[in-house]
Image (cartoon, rainbow, N blue to C red; front, side):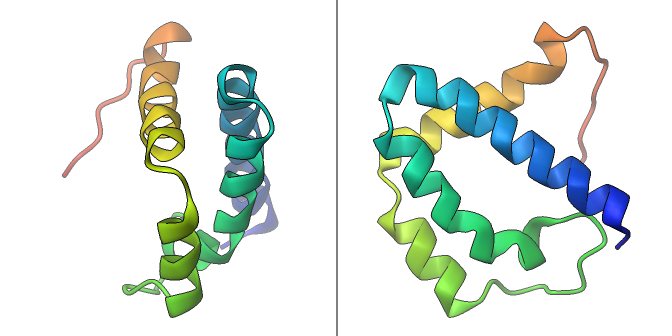
Length: 89
């Protein structure tokens, strides 16, 4: 994975954190920051098929409403930005 791809993933992550932070105060963004340990599993082109135990522990520690709202916000961004995006399975 190139530096450019990593920068795009980090930028998107920060954007999502900023968007969610507006409705959940500082707690949710701080919790989402701990998910950086999951980056090797989720970045495009990763060969890691199974998340590390550190990733799973960090994910478990994130409040469920924070995580669900972050996913909801992220999934609506392409439509709100008029980007036709179709994801596979």
